[in-house]
Image (tube, rainbow, N blue to C red; front, top):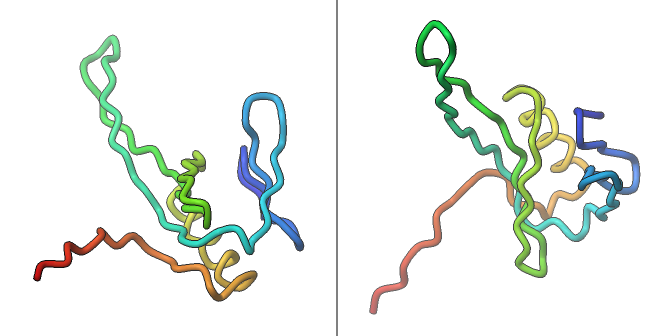
Length: 101
């Protein structure tokens, strides 16, 4: 499976950073989810709103990767593939819960 800057291969995930492709083992991914951001733009005929879609990956070391995708469906398909490659990956966003005593 492939999107413009992301490739899901048999053994690893590759993403483009600058001019280089970086390989990331599926075992390194702790959590993955879809993020949608609204972008407001000014055009010659007025204002327009666009949605941008990102595959968010939290790695076991705590690093958070934000990888741009072309569509919401593309991210959802990638989440399915990630779950198949490593069933230990937590899929979906959950806010951290505060532990109150």
